Picture (cartoon, rainbow, N blue to C red):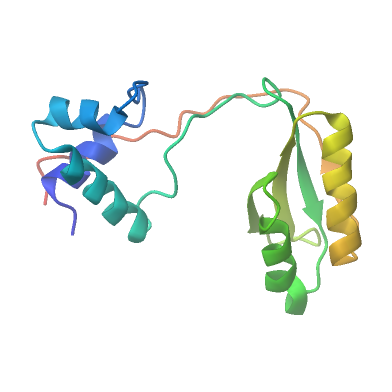
Length: 152
């Protein structure tokens, strides 16, 4: 069950997260609660899968280089291969799709050579080829949402 603090954190800080030395204290000051309460509530939200991370959204290829990647992996090896891919620091997420190319992920690296090294390492470790789908045009979709703070 979401508390009023959970709802405010989810609703009010999707954008314009405080960029200060102590952002959780700044949030606490704005909400009139203790910094420890903010940190505890955010941990609750993470533990219960309401949030997965707190961090910036940086447009693709503004810092380093990235590519969308897809692999065709037999169903019985999908979780094993996904776990191997997730172990790479350069992979920020992966997911299953209902398609012959059923495992998709994004690889981010400092430069094109590093990106190719990671792709090569994943292919070698998993034994599956990767189809690279580099960004040609970028579109920004704001995935923020408004919560009804009055409804329990």
